[in-house]
Length: 385
Ligand code: SOE
Image 1: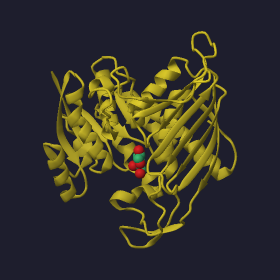
Image 2: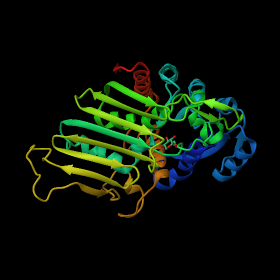
Image 3: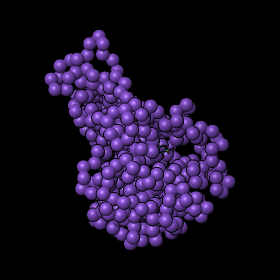
Image 4: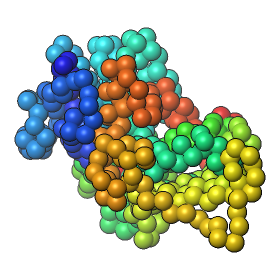
């Protein structure tokens, strides 16, 4: 069994989800690798020491360049704030590492292009963490589309709403609220939340060709958590856009951190000629499906007993679920990261993943759509992708 040693860059929320996946993946998937958590990088010594102890890293480092250039390390996992992704991924590619990077890939498309060039030149394997594709219900959605059960698609509808920044007292910056700082995050809900929605939309419904967007900043300045100064807010607090897909269907996307009552309300719906599908991340173990016609014959099957089916996605026939427990027992958020890592490692071993992993190139495409959305809102016009 080959050993793969991991260098983790980042000790925050995503550093934890990824470290947990490295610890757990071998318990659920049969892989030809032994994973060793070698080094974790962070800036704060105390946080770093706790992180090392919790997740079982052999050593710590406060210099990420050293981690990336360590010849013993095989996989570099970039789980830092967005403004660091470009430099870390490019340097990791130059060092010939396998790379896992958190979303959004970059601060903007120009950075993303540079990253694609570097990883392609180095010929290294990459994965970008669009974890929701790895929710079994979303993967079943994909299977239903691929089985032509939706038929010709007319509508795609996505929302991604949260409510954690409504209070004026929420500061900007620091370890947890860097997502409100444009210099660190690049954009607001567009890069942070809609990037997930765009990734799933293009995965399920094909490329988006043009967009028309509106963004809003509800609270124009906030206290900086590090300096204490009032700082202007320039990221998008909310974003709505219309999209036209290459297949002729039309889409709407809505995202906000001011949607009172919504915590992680990531929904996606597709309505087609033969059927429809709906998923809501706040009920992640269910997929809703409406069957109108038989996919083979196109013959109508809807009758007086037809309605939306609410499928409990926990059977062994469902994507990823044969790796977990018995039917009816659910898995959670952390398992999307485990599933994603399993697919990445199966691909590395030349084996068939459940679904292929989105690469840096795929994520650059999402970044391109995000940039078009921001540009459209700024210029108040439709943008061709
Ligand atoms: C933001 O609050 C956040 O943590 C995102 O950064 C994640 O990508 C999303 O999945 C959950 O919300």
